[in-house]
Image (cartoon, rainbow, N blue to C red; front, side, top):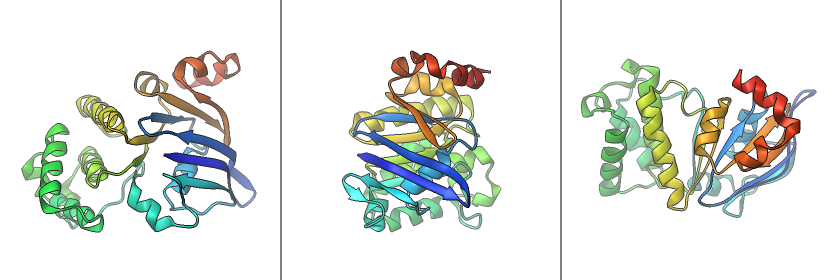
Length: 235
């Protein structure tokens, strides 16, 4: 579903992503693990078509991000680590706006909004309120609902659990797993090792822009060369 081939991206003289290659298959839930500044967000923004890149190729469902960016964006949903959404809209107006962009029909959008808002405990009254009145956690719930509205094939999430209460985090993990069981693919970044360990099919370890290891958690944790990184993250 997602194939990254020899991706490189620099900011001036700093190489944020250095010859990175990895693949996320349909049905897989994958975590992108690394400290802040490791290159996770830069890679994710390149996949989402927000950033250009210096070298390499990215394909989503066989379509090139560089050559057909709009076609790729129709297939995915991207949620940044600090969503910047329209405070003057109500939650419902925002969800309808996203549904309109992706051509989601009235019946389908109503059903999905009801399903996901109930799961994430965002009430009808809250959805009818201006986004400017929302807490960070409520905004996070709203953008998560919007990500699932158009039934994307790939969902890219940057630190999706930040700002969520424990109950909402638990529910989101179930929603993510269900999405992948139905054939979707998810790549999400995190600096919390425990989350990836309990949730993911495979994990990618990145440091200073380089992919150190990509595999199941058992394979990755069995790599003695990564022991220092795991100890730092657990600490």
